[in-house]
Amino acid sequence: MSSAEVDTTLTAGGEIEDTAPAAGNVMGNARFLGSELRLVFGRRRNQLLLLVVALFPLLIGIGLKVAAPQAGGGNGPGSGSGPGASAGAFFNQLAGNGVFLTFIALSLLLILVLPMVVAVVAGDSIAGEAGYGTLRYLLAVPAGRTRLLAVKFLAIAAFAVSATFIVAVIGLLAGVSFFPVGPVTLLSGSTVSLASGLLHVFYVTLYVSAAMIAVGAIGLAISTFTEHAIGAIAAIMLLIVASEVVDQVPQFASAGPYLPTHWWTSFDSLLRTPIDTTTMLHGLLSFLVYAAIFCAIAWARFTSTDVTS
Amino acid sequence: MTPAHADLAISSAGLTKRFRGGQLAVDHVDLAVPKGAVYGFLGPNGSGKTTTIRMLLGLAYPTTGTAALLGVPVPDGAFGVLPKVGSLVEGPAFYPYLSGWDNLARYDAADRTAPAGSKAERIGSALERVGLTAAAKKKYRHYSLGMKQRLAIASGLLRPRDLIILDEPTNGLDPQGTREVRGLVREIAADGITVFVSSHLLSEVEQVSTHVGVMRAGKLVFQGSLPELRRTGSPRITVRTADVENAAKVFAKLGLADPACEAGVITAELGDAEPERICADLVHAGIGVRGLSVESPSLEDLFVGLTGEGFDVER
Image (cartoon, rainbow over all chains, first blue to last red; front, side):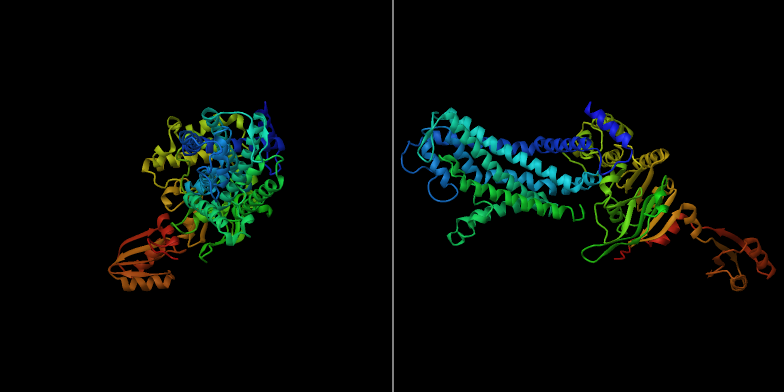
């Protein structure tokens, strides 16, 4: 029995040292992460957020079915410039293949809905605990500041990935139900088998998940600066909208690639054969750098500041 | 740590906290809490008690000075030593949308040294100890203030501890709840656990404490056992007589300190003088003594003397 092992190591060790048996540490850390995941996914508010996220692809699918765009029939409803531009490219394809509803849903929800859902959980992570006063008790347990931050980040990441995959899966199911399904014609013009097309869907979902994890890291950092979850959430959204706006201003084009939101919708390169890895890797690098920087900020702030809540 | 500190459950040297605004919240506090003691940490609200406790628990970092729990320096060693320390800091705090049981499970899960296998058993007995078994499944937001306070104490009892730190555990409790907490403190102490309990009311800790520390404006103005605190108050002799003027002369001859005269009454510090001798001297000097008494100041008087009266905000 693994739990019995933990028992004996503790009593035999007598003193509880920082260098406790590694097995016990892993068990303890897994248990804390499990508790955090239950807290995040078990909370009614967060479940509602995921439900709302799930409804969007369904509504988009119904809406597009009712509007019934003609295949190749000129500009789709999402045409034009802006973050919706890549969504526009998919509208024309949708009538021919339901798989494209996933891309449409992801492109549209990426602009505000997905970041907001992630921002709520990320902004709440530390600030919410501070607001309830539970932060001081967690640290007095002791949860450990770095350990608590790591667990918070992993739970945020899990929530971000879940929200993204819910959009993709519901989008796919709705697309398959409402529209014809068959071999997928990619943006580069070549047609691949349905299985291969689904693999592309999977890649795109992973890419968007990475973008949302980076949002989660930004949110975690902001969350360590306040005791008011709502303030942290608002600050994250403000940052994201500001980045999106600046990205649309031609005069700031040179700053564009460095903006946190710039590469979010660059996943259409994943829908070409061969896959244009340059753009995609730029995007992933951008997410990684943002996640690393903001995790470092969160750590520096959280491990050096008095908890006064 | 010097060897002397090995016998101390809590020790600090020159512990100081200056807030960013420049306010000196804790000013060179040297705590010495012996193992096995019930230490009453007294002082008016705002005297630096909670800030001191926050530094002991590694929640706040000292500006200067050092502190140690069970011989382990904090905050550096806090992660290693805090599993042996149960605490209630500045009132209860839990997740309102979780039940009492789930709240305790949450804090227990955060403790990497807590054996997961005995979780249910430990939570159950902690809840039973504070009389919350019946409310275990009730959401925390529906708890009364007293129940919240008791749940916070239960969270401190989730594991066997060597030290329990309770910050104002009776805040907001009715007299019955206060009595219950006092009983709980006695039970905990009877198990040999050191209890560090803060309060702004002497009466709340007087009956359970073996030692007290008194804070005033960030400084520890007294620390010692209750008998030692009593000894700091010098008893005063009060003589009722018609001839206050001549009685004062006798007092002066005897060298009694701090004499005070009113109509028909004269008082002074007794010091080392014997009351019998004073009475004899007075009668010998031909002064009619109508009454003579010796009174020691109550602990309450001493406490008020140390902390200052009433609502004066000193900073």
